[in-house]
Length: 396
Ligand code: GDP
Image (cartoon, rainbow, N blue to C red; front, side):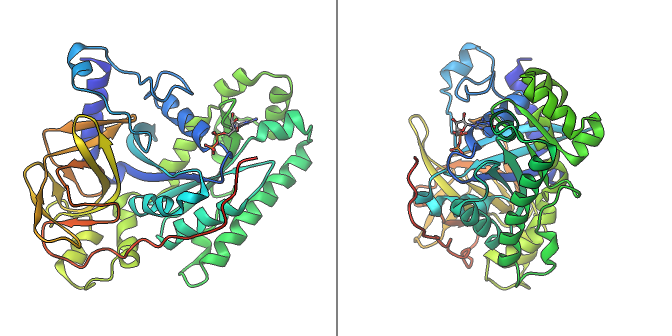
């Protein structure tokens, strides 16, 4: 069996195990390293051949696969990652890097349960960091922090261990200040903050592919001093091999971000104002794959072969080909033409249905727009997604 087929099979298996699924977004101020980190994770998970080549996927070159027409969708990528002897399906939704697209960032947040916030160690938290953290928390999405470009503190700014530690502590403090300010009305504010001690903060260099967290340092035995020494001596390859960024970050994702079963009970009341005692409410909170279909569209993209693809989060039921579904705000129903999942950055059509808790890619929903609620029974649609406007910041 080819490598690609094996990965598809593995993803299909994991689709039915919600406790092993993590739906996440990476969000950052422009230039803080979101793209470099994403490439890193995909390469680390074996989904692309090498960093910086997200379009050259590692796959079989069999004829039929060429003919099928491969869709690269940079906005949605999925990968598998083994953590504590269990494989995990990690669905990563891209958030646009530019503040202009605030609306899209929020839409992406609706589909996910965890947000990896990337902050440049040199620049610190910036206006868009605040925006993405606000968007995540408003949607009930749990943040974790990756402090990037730490190589620059060591090699360019020549900071010593104490200075560096102080700077990292300041970044964490600033991010937590934002979080505390935004969660005052929520239960248990400290559950939303990030910390080195509980493993919800990692730092490193997306460019040189190394990263560390407290759990990873305990595992590898690497100290702050070891890292500084290797980085200073330009032994970045060794650093990458000893403590690869993708492992550290994906372990953090698997350990600290909630799976759909943990996330949906508290997320549904935040984003849906329908009757909390109804069967439908229970089905959504319980991620019931036998329940009514409830699918929230977060993105519409165009495929030259398949036409319009509606991507979104399935909160309840199993979505499959041939179903006739209501689309909020429109009359009549649309018929599902195909359903698929993402694998690497490609959409893979499946012969079977996609169960609740997953990110699905659906064709045939011609009336749907980003933000539509698509369902097998008429229902109160999800809360509309608030757009947070802010001043446009241009790249220098
Ligand atoms: P995005 O706008 O958040 O997607 O940022 P990119 O991933 O495109 O990175 C912006 C710039 O920062 C690029 O020139 C990257 O090469 C650089 N960069 C990203 N990560 C690192 C890092 O860890 N260290 C250094 N020194 N540069 C980095």
